[in-house]
Image (cartoon, rainbow, N blue to C red):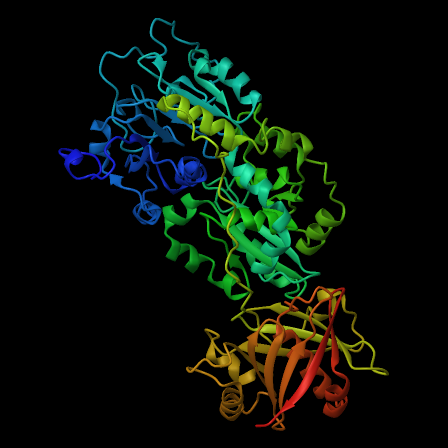
Length: 616
């Protein structure tokens, strides 16, 4: 159901036209999901989905197909099922066997990457690809043998070469969807036989990003990015030459990059997130990725969902550290500062827009201070720096839905739905995901206005180093060596329980009514009783609010005042608690802090925090 032998006996709507979405892997599926809404509300169309099984990256595909909720055809059945239109975003698999017109989209920002020439007699290098019928003429037939001393020809550009575009000398697709005329120029040069199938229809992924730009602040809050914080997104495509890869030609940057970001970027002034290509996730396994990045995650790195939320993270970002992948290009196109941590130019068509980005964007200097480079990239960024790159993403920004639907329905052979505009789905609002650091946090504090109302400057960093190693305190966070103190804050769920024995502050994040650990009064008393070296127990109950108990037995609620717009202060309340600890450890009066509240300074932001005594 709803296709196959005797299906007409069982279906309720038997006269539907059939549109088959052909999935290669999770990466290509993301583009197909972009265009799926173009067929909504049309009772004349039955949507189907299949997977070619030809990709090395098949993990995650069954779960994705199940989540879409469309009938899933086994590939062997899909090849035998007549359809009115098949839509794919990759050239992998036996696409020439599909019984219907084929439309091929790009699954990235245009066509940029060179791939190794396919094996003799094969149209695509993907594992599992069936060898075309015997007797097909090889491209070099009848040509004289090239000079053995001549340089090897450049590898073909994936998606623009006859190796992928033609079958038996004829175009494979009825529609080769392009987003910009520059792609058409390169298509004509590389494979003129397929140029007649070209359809200029914009970029639906880019259009969804453009439509969501006004919601930047919402996406920042969803990622727990407070006003005054800078969100640094680390992005990597797949392959050994990517930022996540270990190609020795440019050095293996990743093992040092993520720990250094945690060490050099103060936790309350920066938020870090990673956007990794689906082929990294599903090639190595999500569990392996989480294991490899465990230290960075415990230090506060957010791992962004590679299927949906990566676009929202780009919109929210203040700076993107990336490579030659499409995600980094999209970031540049919407005006985000970009630092290239890896860029294997030889893997790209030198005439492609992504190669041009590599010539225009600054490189990350891996052995220089990361904070200074991020700040310089943000503070000195010219929003028009990548205007040329933005212009090459799409020749029809905001119009891809209308252009694609027109092309699709033209191939199906029926009129478009009357009276309904073609629309793409808006980007969803991600779940609220603030940083929760389970690595020990080294906290530097300083009373900045001891003569007036309590005001404490706080600089925190997550660290796996010896919490009592103060050799670098003087230069950390811009503090000088005069009038500063240090203490260690440790999450109760630290993987190293030994850290709890030396913690000055112990933290827990949970709802106030969580029956497993709450209420806060009981948990704080329990923690101080269990850890006699701890001076302050902190139970964070939500944005801007925590309950603390001092070693003297005082139970207090700390509440950050909302901003001028009435929204909650998203600074980690554990920073406010550390400021109170510093105030009390400096011999200052709790009564004064309770009476006037305290001002906590993180970077350039001042947080007004009220303190309320509680019974308990």
